[in-house]
Each structure stands twice: as structure tokens, then as C-alpha cells.
Length: 260
Image 1: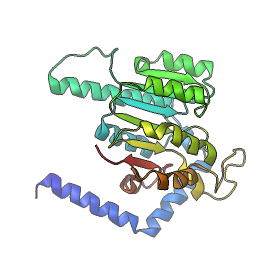
Image 2: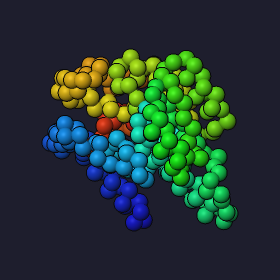
Image 3: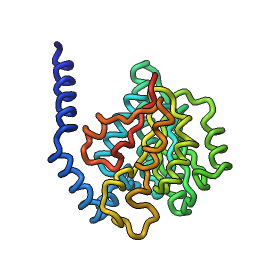
Image 4: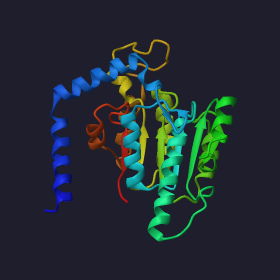
């Protein structure tokens, strides 16, 4: 066994052990709950734009993007644009890596890879900041409800011609909305790639944890995923990813499409 194989084996064994470690899991959920109550998730930027994500999930997304090497990422929910910038920067790194490996040059302002962002309300100051960002050439935004027929048709049309597609769902977190997003966009995910459903953790928090939001225990992204998955056996929950992160807003939300 090579050192690399030994390292990989030890990692798999650790992740399997985490899956059986009730104390570690409870501690991780407790930390997530306490940090969410203190709005820790609002403290971070990516390349100068606020990103409402946990650092663990940012690292996890980086690993998935490197593994899958998508040429299109579709995101619902834009807010300040940090997640779009994260995705665009990861695609830029793929472009640079491809050029280095091929021994070719590249124009950093041009890319065959793209990020599509959808939001019901792209505020003017956020749009201006995103469009002024160095990653802007890799980003296309659509304003409208992510589940409105017109918006879905626009996104599907823009996704034509891309061979390797990843989807992130992170807008309205009610059961009905996320279920509609899964029906609208998960089919665009290519075999071997992922649909990541964020904020499934809501179902693990105390009831009324978000008193000013329409989602709650029993009505959230996790309940939508659980309803949707049985009719879509081509997708499976990637348990290793959530065990690897332990603190994540997306437990049961890393959905890998089989094949590829």
C-alpha cells in the first residue's frame, strides 16, 4: 500500500467512526445551534463579498468542485453575491489548472465555464458590486422567483450546451419551495455531479428557532429532500461529506447523482 493509499484508508476509517460517534455528532449540532443563534454565519467574506456560509461548507464545496470539475454551476439565492463569487473563483482555478496541465495560455477574462445565479430580488447595490467584481465575466444573473415557470425556462435555456452541471439550492427554505426547486433544477445535474440543498439543518434545530421566518421544524429543506428522494433513485445522499465536515448547514443535503 502506498503512503497515499494508507492516508486515504485512514480517512475513510475516521469518517466511518464519526458516523457512529453520537457524542461528537451531538457536540457538532450544539455548536451549530449556538453559533447560528449568534449569527456567526454572517461574519465571512469571499474575495471581498459577504458570503452567508460556514467555512466548513465553503471548504466542502471546493472539494466537490475540484472532484467534479463542472463547467456550469447553477445557484438559487444570491444575497450579497459571495457564494456566486466563490463558485466563479473555483471555476477560474479549474481554468488555470487546465491551462497549466495543457501547457497553454488563457485569457482570464474569458471562460467556457459559467455560474448562473437566481434571486427573486437582486438589490441594486449587490448587483453593482457583483458586476464590478473581477469574477463578473463568469457570472450570469436572473431576477425572478426560482420556481416561476418563466425563470426556470430562462435558466434551462442558459444551461444548454454545458456538459457538466452542478446545482446549489439556497433561496427560500420552506418545504414547498425547495421541493419545487428540486423538481425544476435537479434534473439538470449531470451524472457524477451534485445537487447541494443548503439549510437542511433547520429540521435539527428546536422548534421556532427562526421565529421571523416561514420555515421551521417539519417544514424546511430536509423535509423536502426526504419527500423528493424516493422518486429519484438516481440521487443518493453523500454521507461521507457531512461526516467529513461535521458542522454543516446541509446534513442530508449533499445529493450525488449516480453515474459519471
